[in-house]
Length: 123
Image (cartoon, rainbow, N blue to C red):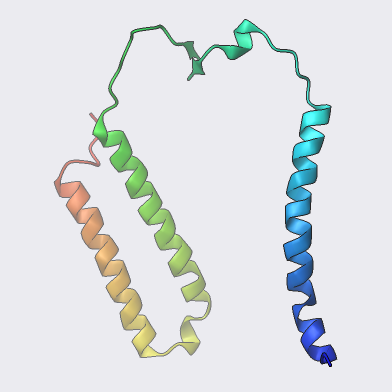
């Protein structure tokens, strides 16, 4: 015999597992039915950053742009960890404070390393 509390505890999970894929399938079907579907040669051409691409032309991106992106992600993730920590900081005690200092120290080391390598200088 199933316990009613057990069933009520897992009911939201079961509903989510059933409804989420159904929502995705319905969204794809509606997009297929409602979207205009006129094909043309102009729509099939490659279009990038406001300029039509020219065949045979190859331009190499500088590595610095990837490093900017990586640094941006690192500091955004830092905010995601520090912001919730500040909300509950008083109840965590001194150990959590020193762990946060260690975390910020590692991020600061990465920032200083990038700065010393010249990644943050705009050229």
